[in-house]
Length: 208
Ligand code: GRF
Image 1 (cartoon, rainbow, N blue to C red):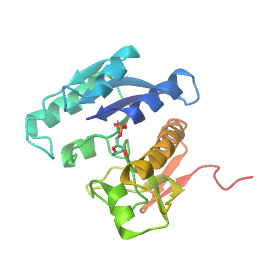
Image 2 (tube, helix red, strand yellow):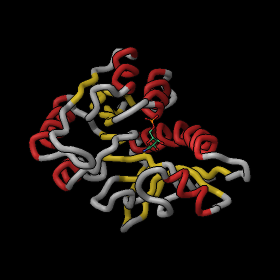
Image 3 (cartoon, rainbow, N blue to C red):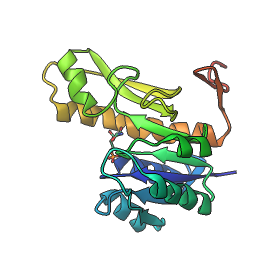
Image 4 (cartoon, rainbow, N blue to C red):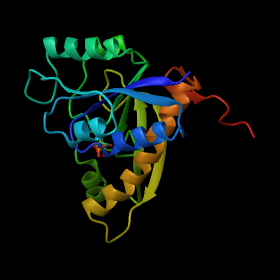
């Protein structure tokens, strides 16, 4: 059965686009049921509407970086109205708090443009460059109360070159994000992800 995904966005929505494209072409076993944003102007909302997907702005009722009481309830209720099986944060620039996390326990994922647990927070591609790492990458993880710290589902590694800028490194990482986020959703949809302690085991991953 195809999994119904609710995607939360704040900006340009390129990850959303890759999820939409791969679900429409049936490369993954999922369909985007609704897109929600804390930013009226998010280009991601337009991408969703262009694809014929319901998209709503919901006032966060707080200055960044959280959602407060009523807003959190509106997000939860809307996701439930659309009967989503999975919530995907895709460039959603807010910290999701306990109530929403427990409503969607192990049913909420995030994508982060670093090899977690290195470089949490914002502008992490710049942090990676400034640190001088040789490899950077992207991580899809389950959302827990530990910001950017939940169990890791998939990661992708990219090299860092001497002449990289924040932009060139971000672009290289973004290509990988567009590949691994839909893949993680597909694994979830096929019920292949099992969590034990802090580790995610992928059914069939070590089988030839
Ligand atoms: C991505 O780099 C994602 O990893 C981070 O925010 C960015 C969102 O980009 N959380 P987009 O809106 O999906 O294009």
